Length: 121
Image (tube, rainbow, N blue to C red; front, side):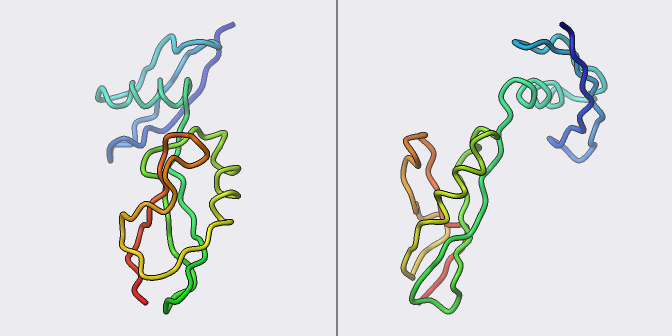
C-alpha cells in the first residue's frame, strides 16, 4: 500500500515542501527538494524519526535551580517522552560545565545526556 506525506524540510534555510511516497518498509520517492539534504531528511523522518532530547534537571548549590541538558545525539522520536521522564529524576550539584556528561549511556541507549550550560556555585 502506497502512502503519501508532505513535510517541510528543516535541513537548510530554504524550507522545501517535500512530497513523499512510501510504504511500511521504505521511501519510494521524494519530490520538491532543491538539494540532496532534503531527500535524506525525508527518508530519515519517514523510516527512523529522531529528535535531540532537551529538558532541565535540578541542580543544587547554585544560583539557579535548573540545569539545561540535552542528548549528545538524536534519540528515537517515540522514546523522547519516556526518556525525559527518567532524566527529570536526576539531580546534580554545582559546579557543572557546558558539555559535561551528566548521564553516560542513558538507559543503555548508547546516548549520553550532557549539560547545555555552565553553572557555577
